[in-house]
Image (cartoon, rainbow, N blue to C red):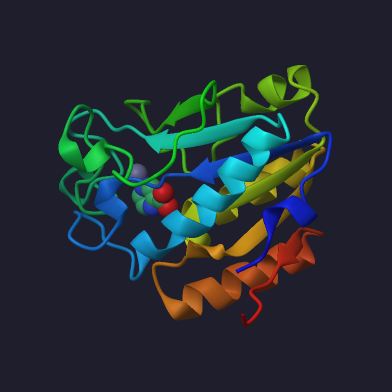
Length: 193
Ligand code: VGL
Ligand code: ZN
């Protein structure tokens, strides 16, 4: 595992995308090995806390009958319904004190896959003095991908902690990494211990 302290510096922020029970094995929209991101992300959150850098956790938080659900014309099984256990953060996810939760997927008329989509998150980052954003979480080929592309479009330097992400499908994951590279996103690849 990478040592986050070697990478985190002043002006950095850490964004943890949708590490919720429904996206982990046993959940409603399980991502293979989704739970494996937790120890990696915890190490980054601890390091960010130690360096007094801001940590943000996004939360997919859908109302009943959300348009992203297959039952309502969308692409996905019903997941992360507000106030259900599946919408909880994974139990062993370390929530850094004073960290901020970014809620998304709450609109009644459309999905918000990107954490930047109509949340005001870019403004928040600027106010917090963040110019480089480290991103990890679920799913690499869906919400992480859309988020990091938006992050670059919003003018931030963006780095993806690859060992802290998992895709819905392996092919989707490969395509996502290629798209990120093409968009000037830095990929911190896994190393063997
Ligand atoms: C996500 C599908 C639907 C994600 C959210 O967090 O990647 N994927 N809603
Ligand atoms: Zn969703």
